[in-house]
Image (tube, rainbow over all chains, first blue to last red; front, side, top):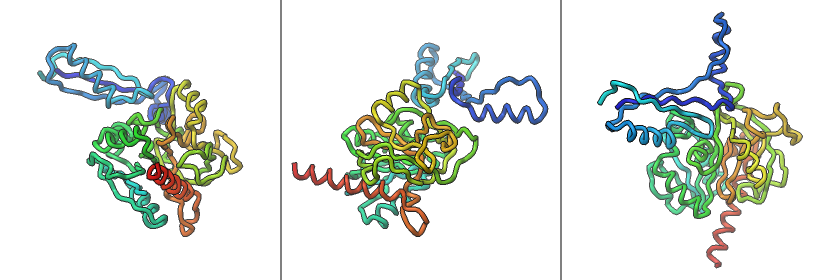
Length: 84
Length: 238
């Protein structure tokens, strides 16, 4: 089963990368961009077939390593048609 | 007294810390590889600065999971002394030995310069060599030194007097201009509730010799050694 995990800085935490990208977009003349948040995306292949079990493992992966929950939020998404 | 300096892949201040203990202060010291599972009976463990695991994922995140960190955790739980400097501080936070997190600097730049620190308490082994409210000049060199925690955690840290060093100006006043990275409440270093684990972003090991123009960091190490020897003597006596 394949999953995607995205990790973003929490809204109240300063996101210098997002801010820098936002400023750069202004410099190249792209208008109408109000905010950019820069995060990370992970594609994970699991041997688990049961979505519930896979979600449990992914939660653990996020809590233990992929996100620092003091300053980051994460989302877990199971992808259809992932490698079985 | 025996100090241990942990070496992670990518540590780069390990030799500086070793130099302070062995050559400047004449103490027994050894390197401990990150895959070690015991601390070779070291009384004090130092997690040095650098870029462990290339700062992959988050600064300190991967190093926090290395085998030696389980031993550091046990050492800390037994009341053993642990000092984390710069990347070492990041690792202590990621390992949950100290509260909060370090995020990228407010300036979006790597900050490498001398800063002024106020010593907020001197009742710890780490700061016994300083006088209360001393203002000292110590260099910082980091990209992710912006200390953040929830408002309630910050209040708890203040209430329980766990802030050990604060960024100040030369006169000792806290200000935003004196804060090199945007850290909440100008926090440059903090300890755990028990006072045996210290994490700090500035590098005291880089200012311990007249030859290099600044010795403000020396009192941290000499005080630490004096206190550790004192604690060991008490243990032997009892």
